[in-house]
Length: 189
Image (cartoon, rainbow, N blue to C red; front, side):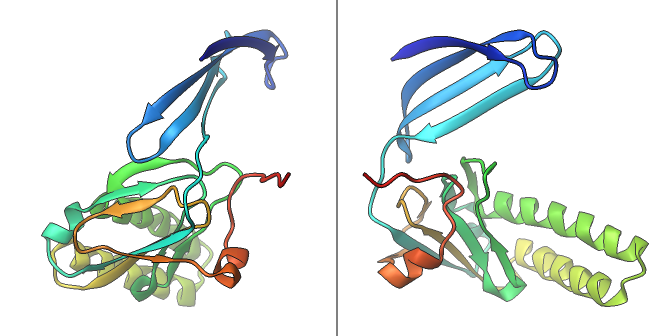
């Protein structure tokens, strides 16, 4: 399905055109792709998954350099956890879906921790600076295969996964599902 709509730009209020297109995306299933560009330069794009699978937890023990290459499929409703780093990445209203690998996700985490650590350093917050530096050291060691990690993705809509023979997939309980963020508005009919 292809559809075009018009709406006012949230930046300059000019009319802008939006394209709506459904596609079958590997690992994610059927999705609605929405994009629009305004003459003022404002851009908007979104991907809305139209399928829902069984709620699941994917767990991968990252112990070798090869494990860093495991494909990661994270939907906008997926929560990523790396307990050894003390990192939980929960979806918010602007969460993106993406396909990467474990190392790519570690790079994303590294960028955020670098930024937070520099902010803590600028604010002379020694405790937060030290904590950030410790996380960065662990990420560097993990990327060399010298620090084992547990990589977990929990998704109440079941659209996230770790594509690896070593990944363990388990169903989520109703209690676990209730504690997870989805990053999107869900309507129950």
